[in-house]
Length: 127
Image (cartoon, rainbow, N blue to C red; front, side, top):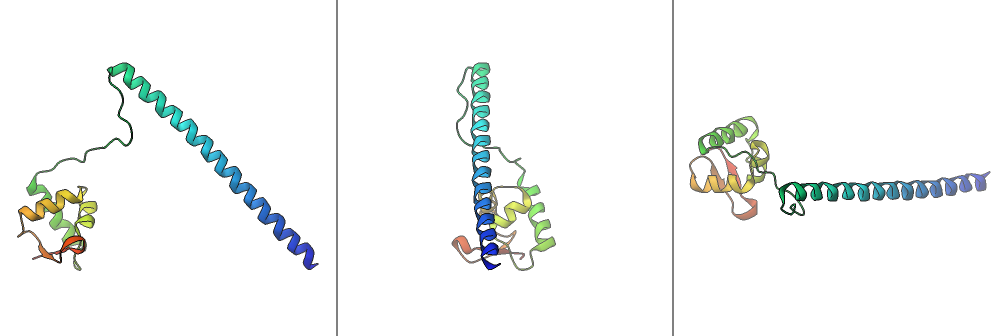
């Protein structure tokens, strides 16, 4: 009885491996088809515009907002969940801006938030 259970386990493990390989092959086929679709779309863009389509990742710009609106949004984020301080990346995600934008804003307006630390470990707190 023990050998049949071990045999069943081995058969199931083999079946799992086969299913994983099949799933990987299916995903690779989908990837190839998607890449073909992207290449076709890039070719259409090139034909319509007369310019080559951008290769690689297309950057989508975040909506630019004035400094006063940014300050208001940052203070709202801190009022909601900033009791233990936040780094620029967390603030940026909550506000919907790039971390560089947040860092530059806080450098030019140091009175908005209190800074603690330096470099990557910098945290900001309400003054």
